[in-house]
Each structure stands twice: as structure tokens, then as C-alpha cells.
Image (cartoon, rainbow, N blue to C red; front, side, top):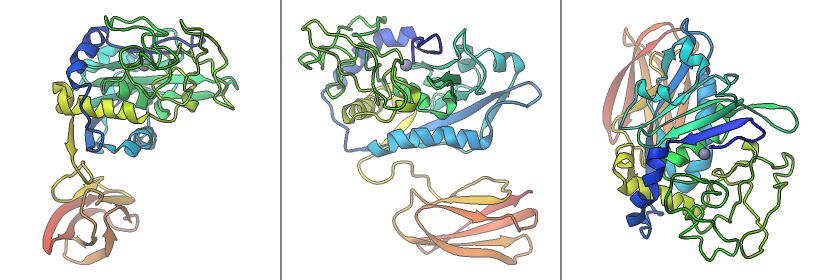
Length: 366
Ligand SMILES: [Zn+2]
């Protein structure tokens, strides 16, 4: 998000990168990686007060990331992370969201997501986000007050999907039409679509958008503004497009050509190649061996079998003394085991794949 709406929301992408963005993307414009599946690596940072209080909870983080799955998985773009949150405990940083946070724990082999608290405003706005394309990093903070005066935490909204969209080379749908940036190629898109591949957001299946400025009815998601292009044709922007300035609650999807552009960029642009990989078929976030978390486990243990070939997998959990305490089998899904009744201590997780036994250590702590 990169503008104010009723002085509520603010979003920026770094201007240095955006000036070069279209020129950098141009050679890949005619490519089509749309049938490939992509995996994007994430790092998740939560900013708290110096004493470790405040900030997003673990369940808030999972809820936030579920928005990414909802918007990207239908396009066969998936995300993986270590399931270990990195906490940045600093009261000054907690109270002052800014791009300076991108210098803390920044990685080049994944997108760094920095999540501030729900009620920490940004530079006079109630909330917003910022994406730094060169650092492949973004933050989200604060809330959005809708026209029913309900405060929506932006961390748990598609604003997160929107900021990832910027990193994966998407412009706003009103780019060149309803905003001026440092992009030297920008020009207004016409409603009839005749210049949609060289103007606007450079994407042909998103309608011309004059910038809705969040002036969208919350109940119907209908744009309440009006306007005409140079031909006198009335704008009909898409109020559900995640890259528009619609109400965050109305953000729903990326179009297939937005997805193709993101995939082409990931396959070809160096800094995005570092944070992603692709496969020509099958689940792309494969990890060898067994992916299980958390370790230490408390009440639940997750066996992530989603990257495995379709099959039935057998598992057993032995305690330190070699006593079998839990066993079962699962198809290739995210399998959650109840460990709430198990004693604290060291365990050995046995897992069978292609007739081979894999043994992993697991700690249980309540
Ligand atoms: Zn934006």
C-alpha cells in the first residue's frame, strides 16, 4: 500500500528499486512460467518491547501467513519457513515502525517479514506496510478503520499479500494511471485495454484503475468514486484485486497474469531467484527427510508430509527408555499429533519412507 486513504493507511515501496523495476523486468515480459510451481522462502520477525512483551503471538503469525497461502496457493505459489519466529525485542523499534528494521537480521535467501503490533501506528497513519524490493523485505503494522468504525489489524489481512506482491514485481493496479512514481515508463492505462501491456500496471487482465483511495463500500465492495479516461470511458476498477487501494477486507485475489508476472520475475531476476525455487510439477517446497515442528513440542507435534509423494506413511514415537508411546500412519498431509499427555523429556521419532527408517530426536516440554 503506498498512499493515504482518509489519512489511515500508508504504504511504500523503495523508490530506488521501483525506478529500475520495469526496465529490469522487460526482457522477461514474453516468457511464461505460469504452469510451474514456485516455493518462496520466508523469515518471520516479530517486534516486541525490550522486556519481551507485546507483539504478535504465535497464533497471530500463523493467521497472518494463512493470508499468503489463501492468495498465492491457487496460483501454485507456496511458502516455506522454519517455523521459528525471530523476536526483535526493542521498545524504541516497537513504537517506531520504519524501513530501518530491514537492517536487522536481513537475509538474502528468503523474504524477511517484519510484523509490528496491531495498534502501533505508522508516521501519522493508523497503519500500513512497506516493501523493500532490493532487500526482499517488508513490514506490516497497525490497523485500518473501516466505515463501520471497526479496527482491522493489517497484519491479519491481505496487506501482507500486497507487500509480497510488490517484492515479486507487481505494481499497484493504478500504477501510471492514478499515481506518479519514479518509474520512467509509466503512462495511464485506457479502459478499453488497448495500451494495457505498455501502460498502467503493465498487466492485461487487470482493468484500468484511477486509484480508488480505499473509497470502497465495505458491505458490497463497490467503488464509490467515478471518473473517465482520455477516451471518455468510465473506469471500472477491480475492487477485489490485492494490488489495488481497496478496503483491505475486499482484497481477495491476484489475476492469472499477475501470477505469471510474479513467476517470470522469480525465475529470472537474480535477487528473486535467491529467495525461491520452482518445479515443473508437484509440490515445490520439498525438503529431504522429515519436516517436523515445533521442537521442543508442547501439546502438539506437526509432521509436514505435504512435500512427500502420495503414499501412506508410518510413524512411531519412542521415549528415552525405548518404550513406544505413540504410533500411527498418515497420508501426505500436514499431520498434527496430540502430545499433551506425554511426559516431558527426550523422545525418538521413527519415520518410514521407501522402506527406510529415519530417526529424529524430539524434546517434549510442557
Ligand atoms: Zn502498495
